[in-house]
Length: 88
Image 1 (cartoon, rainbow, N blue to C red):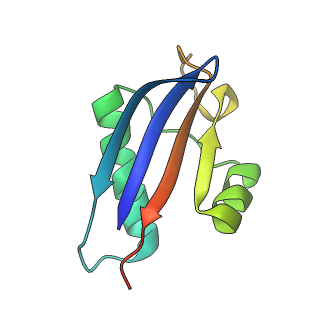
Image 2: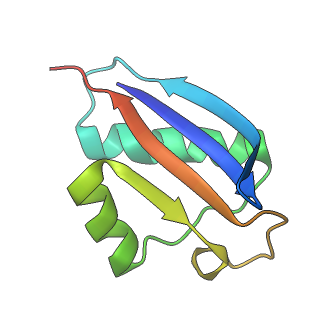
Image 3: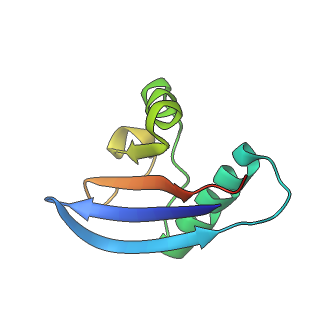
């Protein structure tokens, strides 16, 4: 599985990274582990998965975390996390 994370401000990408996980973990564990690594690399607190975030991710394999998903203030508009490759 490959997951692409990007920070955006005013419709401009500030940072991005790709996390690869081809382990035997479940899809959910891979996503949570990738999010942990993304937050560590971007120096962010872990976002809260609101109901709207979960619904978007289930529908499109992409989610945007806005300020309301973070406890600490963020210096960008949103963090977008997208599954770009699944292992089957």
